[in-house]
Length: 261
Image (cartoon, rainbow, N blue to C red; front, side):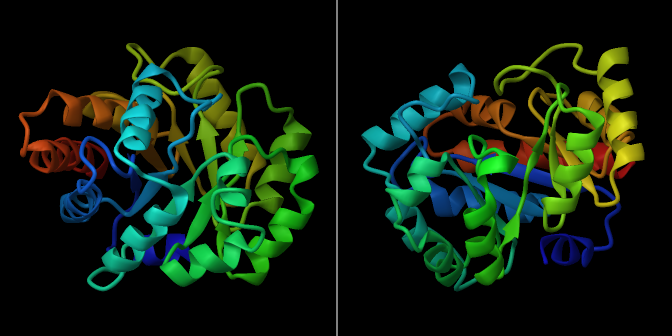
């Protein structure tokens, strides 16, 4: 399982890096995956670029458009993942909207992504109530299903999500879309995370808004780890051409050091 593989490094907190395949260049993905691994990421979320990403903010939306323009497709992502698997066992989760899995890969998507080397999936637009058949397919393929807990989730729903998720849950820090935020850690956020801790038995990581080592360290105090996406993509976008992977690795190393303190 994913958390077992991540814990093998002896770390107490998870660091997950969100990578957009095909961004910023068609051949960037393998370099980004290797940079994340070398920087100490415990697992990676590979986003499937989609034309109408309802849960994503402008940074990831723009990255997705660039990736699509560079010819990246769900099936090409599986090819890249299979290539990465030749040299790495780093856990990889595919994160995408249900249509990307069903139409982009096929009705038997779970088996296909497992064969390519994926370890789990996150499907933001798949509700718990509608996930029965999908969960069965994912379970049969021996993949990890990561479900999202939102600030608006009721106590009962949080417990249900905790029960249905395979290894750990993804806790959305704020109501809204993805994106780096200033002053993320507030009384409302910490109270929410403290509530999730009391209601869940499995680990949970926190994403949406983490952008600095200081925020990462503070959020990790109330969770089992962090996910960084938009801020990482911003670092990649700001780097000189050819230096994107180095910039990504440097940023992730700083986050790793912060949550390890």
